[in-house]
Length: 68
Image: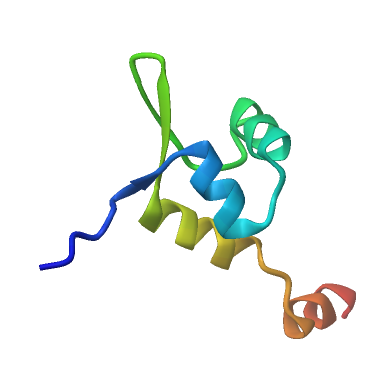
């Protein structure tokens, strides 16, 4: 049985999104990306990241609606 990860590390998030590790850390510090802190460790819940990506994705329709 394959276990699905619930959270990603900063390195895994960087690799998954193509963002640099420093950008992931900057977005974390600014509170832009969903994350949880457990002690000194910072993890990124997969469902939160998927929602964040969906909400921050700009589509042609969103752009067109803004310009109207």
